[in-house]
Image (cartoon, rainbow, N blue to C red; front, side, top):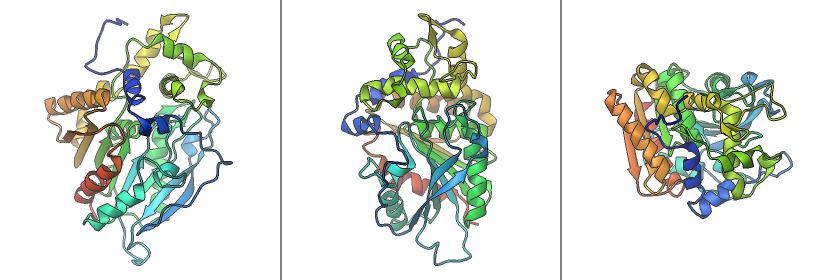
Length: 367
């Protein structure tokens, strides 16, 4: 492969470098300790609706080489009227969290976070948004994030999110079990997952909203120092911010360049013996939404509504969001794109309340 070739994208690792310098909020994310069964969970904050954390068996995740449990914790927020209206059915927003993050942080089970999902959802309902069920699976893995991709290492997270999880929620809750009443959203890695799954599974969801989506572009010249650090044993267990980029490299490799013949991690990094491995880089490019988008134009055109955004100080991600906006415009795909004043995390709760939930309130069918 010609490494002088340039996609009109920004490198994934450059994005992570920018994220890692955004300040205290991102420092907290990068240093988040791995959730474990020994780490006690608190109670969610008081809310107008009802919160519960359930376990959903992921048949699609069975046998993953990381050794992660296929039984995934899932946060479910039921709106205020759910318990009082025994026959009413509701639209559902499926929301995907970011790298190093988990549903337990978004719903306040581990203390203060950069966002309180319940507060944002309650605020949106109080301001007039139609009531919906909100569902967020825990996608924290051995390598700190699934990338919502299909891999023998991480498991088939595409199928878990679009089949296992949706089927379970439709069976156990009073949903409106049809495409027109399902929305998909996510932040950062979850924004990447929203666009990836949205392109590939238009039969499941009807509206998409990607908040500060990471990883839209492909890196044709991987950083050798980051790869060297990622190759060191035990890096995935570190919690210091200095290992953030290396851990993101490992998560990306586990998702996009798995290798069942390469234990103990079962993945291939994009540099080996000091040389870029074109075959690995090519596989990463194939998983970059900016490279994928033109292949899925008919699928994107089938959506009722698509939106994505980024803060102007989230420079690398804002750049890829502008590029995606240009692709969508070029091919005539209806969408809304916004660059707002902010960084990667500082306005997420506010925008969840004032933008995301109202967006789905407007576009998801209630019957």
